[in-house]
Image 1 (tube, rainbow, N blue to C red):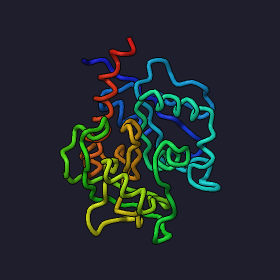
Image 2: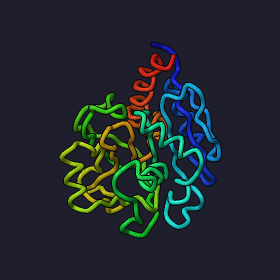
Image 3: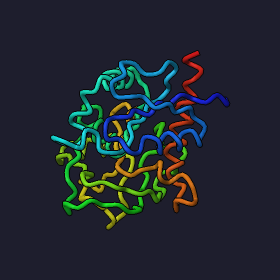
Image 4: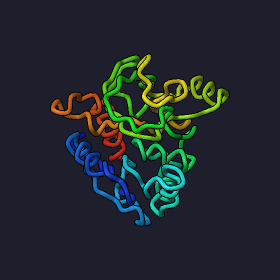
Length: 233
């Protein structure tokens, strides 16, 4: 199929990677319209949704805590409940955990400092719409830039997620930039149609940026979304 799947990118007050995400998706073959947080519906023909990085509502209260109440999030939650693909990047990951669409929580980096650098990542399961262009155990290089990227879960939840194969990305050994429990960099929900990660794949899609590994993740999403286009016609 050559039809371009429609993957809207939600814009919240304080989002600052929305256009980067849209440009990356469009370069990989998708139609990526920007959707304002007060909209009460997703665009017709939506096949996946991306919540981008940034500082929604200035990260007041907790990162993502206010954005989860935005009108568009009701539609995102309903879309996900019906099996729709939802990707949250950095602040988008935080919003998805606050909304209860992903397990765990994001809190301040262990260093209490903002971190911005390339990090090595290890791919877990590739049996997901977000990692099918990857190989299990493959090493990716993708940048992080966050102050509240420390993913937390208690030991019982962590063991459950590991058993169920929901941990999709981990930071390479000895490179954890934020103190995340279990070196977790990205997780999915139980149905594997919602995925959140702290690294920014939209900033690793061009050799000029130092890596094209982000295209493996975003390209997987575009491929999966394209497969669902036919079901919407």
